[in-house]
Amino acid sequence: MERQWLSRRMLFRGTHLKELSDRFARFFSLPSSPEERCFRLSGEGVEGEYRRAFLDNSIEIGWESTRSDREVRLAMHTIGDAYSLYFSLADEFCWSEELSGAEWSIGPDSFVVLRVNEAVESMRLPPGCRSAGVSLAVRAERLERFLGDAPGLGLEAKRGYVGRSFAQTDSVRRVLEELRHCPLCGDLRLLYMEAKALELFSLILEQARSGSSARVRDPLSRTERQALERVKSLIDADVFHPVSIQDLARHGHINECSLKRAFKRVYGLPVHSYIRERRMSAAKELLELGRGVAETAFCVGYGDASSFSRAFRKRFGYSPSGLRA
Image (tube, rainbow, N blue to C red; front, side, top):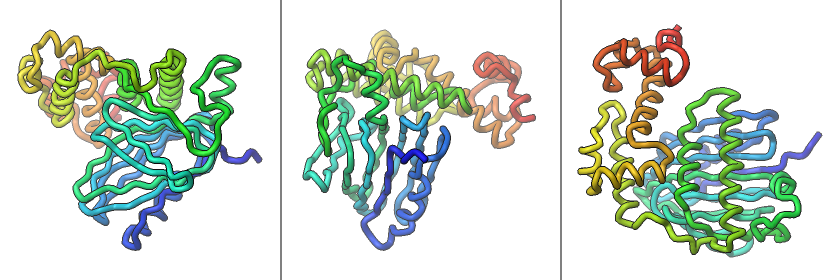
């Protein structure tokens, strides 16, 4: 039987969090076939969600969003020859690796690619801290076979815990958003995420070969970036009551033309398309919970059930009543 290529174990430092460590053991075990898992944290002063997608025995994608009311010290013990990518979707995030003594940090404008054989990554979350991020691990053999004799990341011959920092370009942000908001289900969802993971690596390889790494300049100014974050936060905060482009621009302190141009560049969709996607995703969740079509239409901001049904069918290829059936 083939040995598992990646082994992870989450260790919460503190006796009051021992139960969480035990519950994470099953969550991080590799499955025998591709699948996606979700783990919700509630209690012990920690709230949040972890998601993991395991793809074709060589790629792992993770999403996490947590908030702690108390100080939490934790560590992730990883064994396996892999390339790991870490992206922050919130503020700057720092951690250290206990075996090598290396220290790393990521933020909204940068990410890291690490070559890992064995690592114990430790971090501290202060009270009230909010953490949100995306991680990606690819089996080293898979990536190096993909590269062949072509130049890679410059980490191929190294062992231990070494890496490089890169800039989060608009293209990288777009793929991250597409990974987070994949509209598909089942096997097609896993296939879509695998394609996006490989696309992400191709963008990073392009950066590495150009020698730009973290020196790549972001074409958007810091002010524009902050404006987009305010706009997106407002949309995501209440998808049930869509806001007009004019109000979004006013909230973000940015003019409408700049908002439309920059939003599509960074997130891969026009503003109105992103809002529609979020509304349709929310509607699908309500229907799956047993809500009626008319009630769901009203909840996501449609004036009548017929216009909602047309939009839903156009988006998913079947009627909302068919989903409830």
